[in-house]
Image (tube, rainbow, N blue to C red; front, side, top):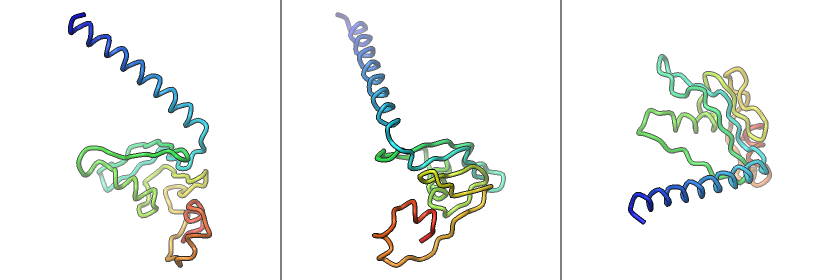
Length: 131
């Protein structure tokens, strides 16, 4: 078998493996509960549009990584919006189906917490009730 035939056969095998992995991951993900749901999220800083209609779902137990080009592309802004440190221009973020934002405004309040409070509530309760 020549180099071209070997390369084509290897490419087909790798494509087949990728399709199987994609199918398995999709099947596993359907079984989990969506912990974080982001829909149509937009963020503008003046005339500069940082986030343009971001849609994202992170299921329970799923590990999700945000990577991308150098600064100024919206990675930190997205995390700051999820952490309620920034307000989105529009869109919604839900933690376990509880909306954090309505109409672009923050619906929750954050305040200092006593250390003992961390053990008695789940993370979605912090977002919903505030610290």
